[in-house]
Every structure is written in C-alpha cells, then in structure tokens.
Length: 105
Length: 349
Image (cartoon, rainbow over all chains, first blue to last red; front, top):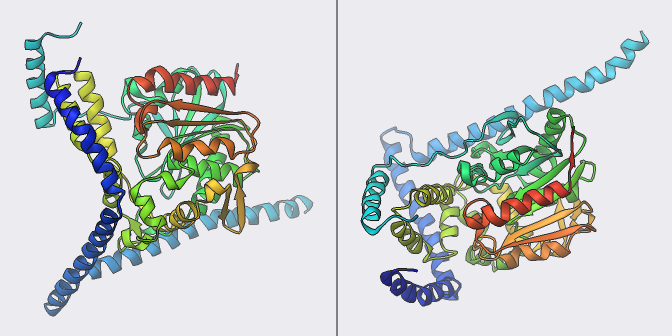
C-alpha cells in the first residue's frame, strides 16, 4: 500500500496533471510556444549577427563562418559518399557487360 | 522478502550516494553482436547465438529519433536478448547520429535505399531467402512504407510496435504543425537537422507533470536496486534523442502530419503512391494503451488499413516503454511477441 505522503501527493497530482495536459493543448499555450520558438531563433540570429560584425572587425572567424564551412564540408562529404557508392556499382555493371564478351572470345 | 524500514533507509542512503556520485550508472546494450553492413548512418547488426532454431531471420528496424539500445536495455529487460534466447536469428538496423551530410536524407533515402540494401545484406549473411520485418516507433512507419512500396522484397511477416498512423492523436507538437502554426524550418538548425533538444522539448510537453512524478517514484523506490537500475536506464534513454534529418522531417510534417497520409492509406513517395492495402503478408500491430508518445488512438487504425488476411493486434496496458521494460514487458509483451513470431516461422534443422 502507498504511504500517506504518496497518497496525498497523488491526490493533488492527478487533477494538476489533467489541468496541465489540457493547458498544453490550449490555444494560448500553443500561441506562446510558437512565439517562444520564433523569438528564441530571432534572438540567437541577432546575437550571432552582432558577434559576427565584432569578430570580423578583428579579422576573426565567427560562428556563422564555421557553420558555413561545416555545411560545405557536409555537402562535400555527401558527394564523396555518393561517388564512393556509385563507383563499385559502375564497376559491377562494366564487369557484367564484359563477361559475355569474354566468354564469347 | 521486502526489507524492513531500517534496512530500507540504509539502502536508500547507499543508493542515493551512488546516484549522486554517478557510480551506479547502468551498462546498457550488452548482448553480443557483430556489425555486418554499414552505409552512411545505417548500421546492420547481427546478434550472436548458438541456438538459432527458427527461420526466417528477424530484422528489427529502429526509429530515427531515438537510440536503439532501448531494445537491449538491460540483460533482464532486453527484448532482443529474449528473442535470441527463444531461438530467433535477430538482426537490428539502427541509425547513427546524422551529420550535416545526412540532413537532406528523405524518407525515400531510407525506404528505397538503406533498408532494401540492408535486407540484401541480411539475406546474404543469414543465407536466407525471406525475412520477418519488425519496426519500432518511427521505424514501424519505415517498415510499413518498405513493405508497401517494395513488393520485390521477400518480406514474409510484418510487425510494428508503437507505430503512429493517425497523426491527429500525436500531441501538441504534431497539432502545431498540422494547424500550420509551426513550419518544419522553425525547428531546424542551420545545418538542416532537427536538433535532439527540440525533439526532447516536444516529448516533454506531451506529459508535463511526468518529470515530477518520475522523480518521486525514483525517491520512493530508491532502496530497491533493481528499480533504480531500470529507472536510470529508461530515464537516460528517454532524454537521449538523436537529431532528425531535415529532408525526412519536412516530408513527415507534409505527408504524415498535415495530409495524414498513413491514415488515408496512400503515401506519395518518390514517383509513386505507396498503398498500405498492398501489404498482404501476416501482420501484427502492437501498441500500448498508456503510451503518451504514440497514443493507442494513433496506432489502432493500422489494423484495418492493410490488405493482409492474417492480421492480429497486441494491446498492452503499459506505456511506450512497455514493450521492453517493466512487468508488462516481461509478462505480456515479450512472450506474446515471441509467440507470434514462432507461429509465423518454422523450425530449422
């Protein structure tokens, strides 16, 4: 059997949980959540822009520069990977095409 | 026998100190396995066993948003270990954390490239000509799309666990995307991935008071070492998400959330329409009634959307984790999953 303090907690928690569940489904909460997501992104962008200006003034790389580099490396890595996958497939196709020719010769 | 009051206090103090110093961190995913195939983030593992009694081999496809060690959490609460001990040849296809190079991966990348290629590697490795496909959570969505969209693959049976289909029941985050309050780009970072923290925040809002209740359960059972180990393992996994590739995320929002395409039974993929009614192999739809991540109402409709003649439903009274940990997993989920697999396999010599 649950202890007295646990029973007391559960008695309070159940209605509180139900209220919290319906609160997070409410229009107000969703509006606030959207506002918070967008405000956070905007604030981050503003801070990054400001710090970029300052760092560039000193000839230093900024977070944006590192990110651009990371994205370029990412797409390069993807291209290399795709090429690496295409080469063995191409080789296999060439081998398959040459096999009957070799057999005929 | 349960320890007395004094002994409990002592155990509580000892386990509490161990928790605070981090010395009782559980070791997870201990089942021995070999990596047999790898492409980009996709990894195919085969679990070692000396007692494989049933065929065809079983391939479990894991979700894109969480880590696969939940399926092999602790030796006593491991779905994979249970299946291996039951005599199945178990493979796991999971996904390493995506890098910016993987941000443009789409659903087609998984459905038309990685999974079929992994299936090819599995068939070669196991010297089999067919397999049973099992999908967990979003991995279930991928297995449904593969089964429906690739009729050339030798899928003998299909099972999905905690797999969403009706996205109207997927909670607040899903509702915000459906009502177009949020766009996929709002939650993506500059590399084009949806950061793990955004996913974690989304999961936390599904049951806002849960964190407090879980903490309290932990304190109440701090004397119980078995509970503490299991609790710490689950709590660690629950916060250990992986980033979601932006390309696949955009499609998830557009097709699965906004168009609710899985519930409609037709998912436009690549240059074709994938129809769930074209899945005709035996099918098990397993879901949990108290699941707050994939509510039962989101999984239930799958049972009537497929074209299979042999369709069964496994309804657990637990939560999302009830397939792998807890009393429900040990007494109901694992034995019934194994029984269904056995009933749809044959003994091999």
